[in-house]
Amino acid sequence: MTACTSVNATTDTAPKTSKMQHKDGMKKGGMRGPMSQLDLTATQQAQIKAIIEAKHGDYKTDRAQHKAERAQMHQQVQTLTTASTLNDAAVNRLADQQAAKAKQRFIERIQMQHAISQVLTPEQREKMAKLKAEKMAKGHKGSEQRKMHGKQHQGM
Image (cartoon, rainbow, N blue to C red; front, side):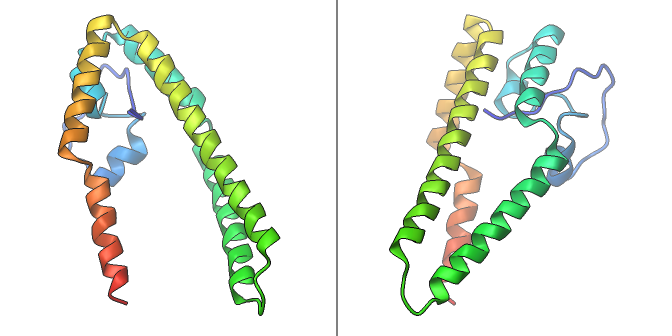
């Protein structure tokens, strides 16, 4: 339930690519995904937008930091995998670091979803639960794309 929001009163009728919608979802285009089907009031939209912005902060700063961390992790993995002997202690430290990051992302996502849920009426929460269940029953486009991507790499 990581939907982007907007409280702009204007309507943007220009078609957008999915990349633009993702990048500019907080600025233009209103609610996306299941949130767009909840008939949110302007107040609710503003509250949800504030919750999401508080969670995500400064994208550009975070993106640069995450890119540097991924590069460092990649270098450490390369060093471990090309060494003549495997350093089990270093592998365990990297695994623990990755697990801690995943745990923190999970906690933050649940906290954000809870905060957004508190903005919704009971009827909207019920509708959101139904929409999520339908999405899970259909499967995610992203998971299908990952499966296809994995099959492409298996052939190499």
